[in-house]
Length: 246
Image (cartoon, rainbow, N blue to C red):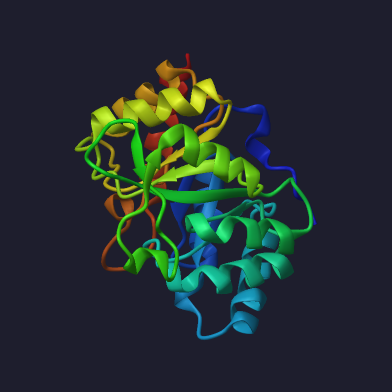
């Protein structure tokens, strides 16, 4: 199984959802391989059925598979870890408290494992209480530098910053981007990103000096009738990325 992500040599990799295996192939081709294709654990009744289906996805897209929670649902954390142990994808989405479990069960350091932290309303501070129990407790708010250090301690690869609401949390996002750059950590902006604000959001991360950026673009580019991500929108995002990177 190929583990080294296609985007290691690149600075930006898209992350979009697939509505079907055929859609995953179309997305991968549209992005010229500069993409991680998300498949949500929440869409499956159990681990066994998820593993069987996701292995088929992985085979179609050179293992550019991103195992998803499903709207950041903390109750999917354990299922994501077990699926990832068996499938060995290139990318794993996790709540903050699930990072160490996923890394340990993966048994290797090549797969990218993100940790979900959320805006707080205060630049430089993030909410890390995004796990199954902690999400229901009083907010755990820490400096973003502390969150990054904790994620590194747990074997994490990146900050998944969600829900951003597009540019609504711009000042906070800028602070997170600066911290990721300063501490050589990857950044995954997520939530409310569309074709209109994508370039600006990506520019903020790149201008801050973030070494690797994985923007998640979900509902805004999904055809509501079919449930599939529109390949033409993926091509447009790739074109914007190339233009920004020069």
